[in-house]
Image (cartoon, rainbow, N blue to C red; front, side, top):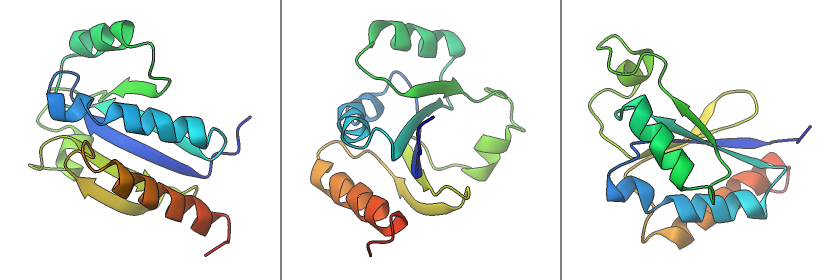
Length: 129
C-alpha cells in the first residue's frame, strides 16, 4: 500500500482544452512522487460517457478517474461546494482530509508554479518545513 501524503483533486471536464492541457504536469508530478502524491481527476460537468471515452484514449494518465456520482443534478454536493466557479479547479488535500490549498483555473503554462507548490506541500507534510 502506498503511503500517500497528499492528494490532488483535479475537478475538470474531459473536453475543454484548459482542463486537458494541465494533465501532463500532474502526471509528471505523480511520477516524481509515486508514494506521496495521489492525483484524482474528478469529472464534474461532462457526461460519464465523455469521461470514459477520454480515459480510454489517454492511457498515459495513471490517475484515479471518477465522476461526480450526482453528475447533472442541481443538488450535487460537489457542485454545491464549488458553486459557480467553473473548471478546472485543483484542490490539495492533506492525509487528514483537510483542504490545504485551492486553485481556480488551469496550471497549463504555470507548470513551475505547480511544481513548487507540490514540492512545498510534500516537504511540509514530511516535517521538513
